[in-house]
Image (tube, rainbow over all chains, first blue to last red; front, side, top):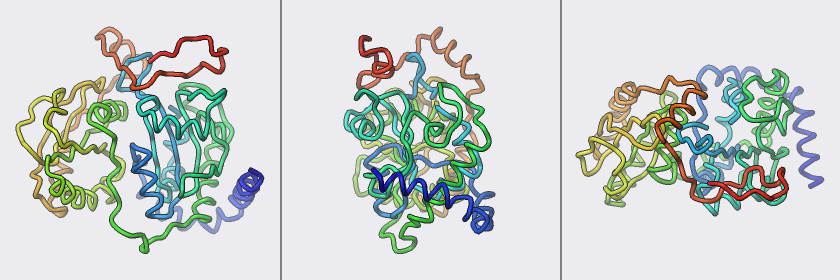
Length: 72
Length: 269
């Protein structure tokens, strides 16, 4: 747990430091990126993360509101 | 679901350095357990979960919670669509920093990227309606044919033009299409217009199963262009759905709020 907190602290400290260095590459992809492509299953997404070695952004939500479907 | 964090252009740009997984809460018992492993106050799975993880899916890299606001600051609560700019910026910066620490295998990664599939057609119609996007069904009762179709479609789905603009689901059995109108083909890339409430669908176009990626691209663009997203606001959608009797029964009990209310409420679906 301590290692995770330390990692997060480093991330948050490093983020502003590296942000200027990253600006060029971020800007290069920014215009291209319009949407997030979501894997819809844990099994499929995890397999893809292991295949690519990329970290995971995990979100979960129920596609209903008071039992009315078709809405997040 | 929190829109403002995930709609930010820097967050979206950073997301392309991640594998993004969005699960439908309460729709799969195994996935419920995975989610509870990351965030479950009082052991109860809540309606929404957010976190960032290592590539093996085992270690949290930020505080898990109901939304990005739990990790990056901001306003907590349902339907919050206007988060502080600094919180959104912090999310984008943190994701970029994590992507530096976990840069991925690049071209050394084995195989083609898999299609970002949903679990089944029933759920896929609902999710596509919720995202106000068309649905692409990879349909064949022949496993080998479906694998070939997936290989060709994958080249297209992850291209700049198509990333994140449609939902995908595999189907092997014609009976799964019972809620989809106008399907006559027995295989193919079936582009579907989901009904407003995601309980039904209507075929927009069927692209032949043997079509190669180079040709799929143009045909798919044309078919996706025929999709007509719902124009209802959130509240209008809810009211219209209630009036129309559109109801969704989740696959597992809804346990949202049990911890905060002392566990006395009966789980609802």
